[in-house]
Image 1 (cartoon, helix red, strand yellow):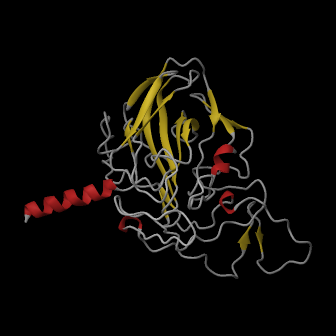
Image 2 (cartoon, helix red, strand yellow; image 1 turned 90 degrees about the vertical axis):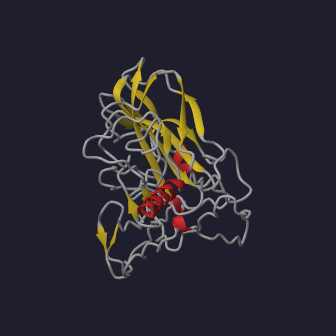
Image 3 (tube, rainbow, N blue to C red; image 1 turned 120 degrees about the vertical axis):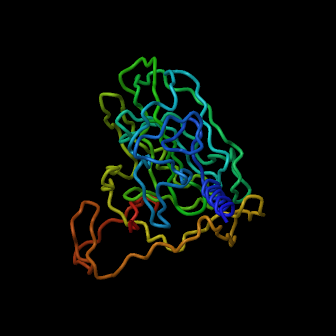
Length: 340
C-alpha cells in the first residue's frame, strides 16, 4: 500500500511537470528541477506547477507577475554585461504550436521589465509548422547581453510567452541574477509585452496566422530601467500599459472590449498524435491538461457599463451623434473577461 502511494505521488508530479513550459537555467524562483538553484527562502516551498501559466483568460486563473515576489537569497546566475548567455528550458515542454516569447530584465524587484531579446512567432518550434504541434524542437536560446546593462546584485531576469494555440494564456518565470561590468547606470529597451492577463489586451489563437498579436510587440514603448528606478518614453501603440499591481488600464482610443471568451479551448493533440493542418473547418480536440469549464459569460444586459476612463454610463441608447468606433483589432482592446 505504501509503495502504491509513493508511485502514485511520483506519477502525479510527473504529469504536472509534463505540460506547458518553464525555465531550467537560470533557475526560476522555487523551481524543483532548475539548474544550479539557490536554496528556497524560508517559509516558501518548491513549486511543482512551475510549468503552468500565470494567467489563463479561458479558465479564469491569475497569479502575480513573476508568480513569486520573494526572491532567492542569492542569484541563480552571475552574468557580465556584453557577454553571450544561454538560457535553457526544462525538457518536458508542451509547445502549443509556438507563439511570442521575450527575455527581459528588471531592476525594481520585478515591477518594470525591459526586453533584452525576443523570439516572435515560433517560440520552441523554430519555424512555421504545417499544423498544430506540442513538440518542442528548440530547448535553449543564446543571445548577447547589452553592453550598457547596469550592474546589480539584485536584478530580475524573466522569460515570458504567449502561446499560439490552446487556452489563451500568459507564461512567465523569473530568475534572480547578478549583472557585473555594466558601463551605464540605466538601460533603455522595449517594454515587456503582457497579454492574456487581466487588464491587458487579449491575443486570440493564431490559427496559422503567426502575425496574430504582433502589433502589440512592434508597438511597445521604449522604457528606461536601472537600479535607481525606471521611466517610460514613446508610445504603446493602441493601448496603455496597466499597473501590474492593480490591473487598471485606459486605452489610448475608445473601442469595444473583446467579447467573453467562452468555449475557446481549441487545444492541442498529445505529442506524437497526428495533427491537423491549418485550414478551413479543421477540428481540434482538447487534451486533458487544458480541459475545464469555460469562463462564465458576462452577466446581465441591464447592468451599467464602464468606459475605459471609469465613467459610468447607462446601457440604454443615448440621444446624439454616435461615438466613433475604434479601428483597432479585438486583441488590442482590454479584456472584459476578468472573473478572477
